[in-house]
Image 1 (cartoon, rainbow, N blue to C red):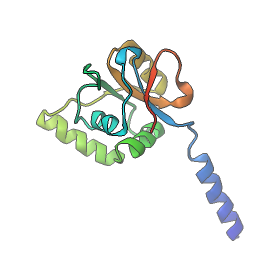
Image 2: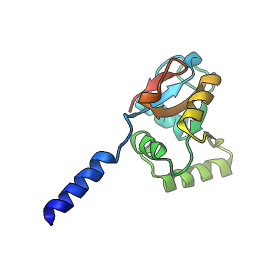
Image 3: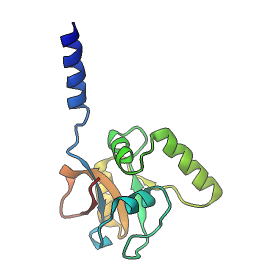
Length: 137
C-alpha cells in the first residue's frame, strides 16, 4: 500500500509541471533584458518603465491559469489571493493601473508582439521571432 501511495505522489509531482518553463517576453523593440528585481517591480506595479526608459505595458493571464500561478510563484512570490488583494489596493488608491489581461498564452504572445513596450510571460516552448525573451526565472 505504501508503495502505491509513493508512486501516486511521484506521478503527481512529475506531471504537475507540464511547462518547459515560464519566460518573460517583450516586444522586439523593448530592448534590454530584465533582471529578477526589475521583473518583480514591473509585475508589482513598483516600476512603470523598462530599463531603457520605454513605458511598460504589463500583461497578465487570467486568475486560475497554471502558467500565471507558476510565473508569480517564481517572480513575485505571491499567491493569487495575495495578488488580488495587492492590486485592489494599488488600483483603489490610484497608485497603479492593473495589468492588461490576456485570455491565453497565444493571445499574450500576439498582444506583446503587436505592442511596443509590452511585457508578458509564456511557456518557453512558445517563443518565436515575434517576441524576445527578457528574463527567465
